[in-house]
Image 1: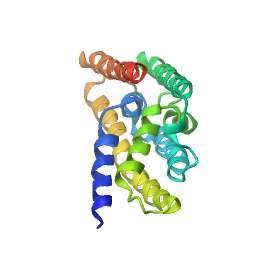
Image 2 (image 1 turned 120 degrees about the vertical axis):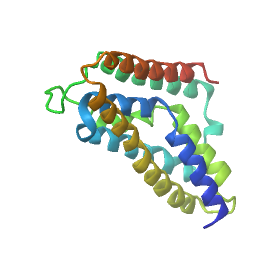
Image 3 (image 1 turned 60 degrees about the vertical axis):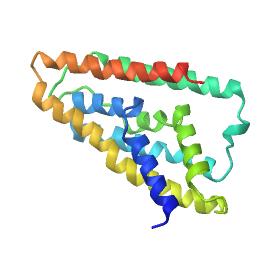
Image 4 (image 1 turned 180 degrees about the horizontal axis):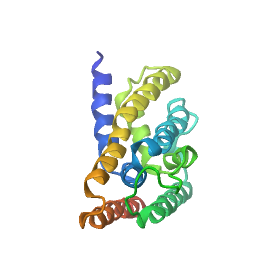
Length: 198
């Protein structure tokens, strides 16, 4: 295995596996709707990053040339959307998977990463720092896209399953509301970090 590829994997595992807006939303969805009912949302989030990887890797989008206005606009749109999803799930009451309320959809998941400037910067960093300089853009995309996809396919469901696992153990107890408040607070803090970031 090439050293650059091993470094890329370590970088992506640390970035994708760490707490952030997407992972907190996955926990919240698993908490309320269970793992199986949340799977379309999980898959939507996983697929959504592909919409960013290809334009960056192929050089169609160059973040270094992006205007400050565009970056700020993306930042606030991302914060607003994540805040919308967080507020929508804030009044979570852990219920069984037979609940009639609809879980977040595949299409809602598709919007999460493209609106998140941090996701764009993570992919730009991966492309600039862990891909050999002499690698052709299309080859770089072929390396990045499946690597992101596989790591997300492993780590994102774990966060959602964690929410479902916790729900099975605290549903109907005094800890139920406390856990929901903690997850939503972490989500809102991640939104605040997006807004305050340079």
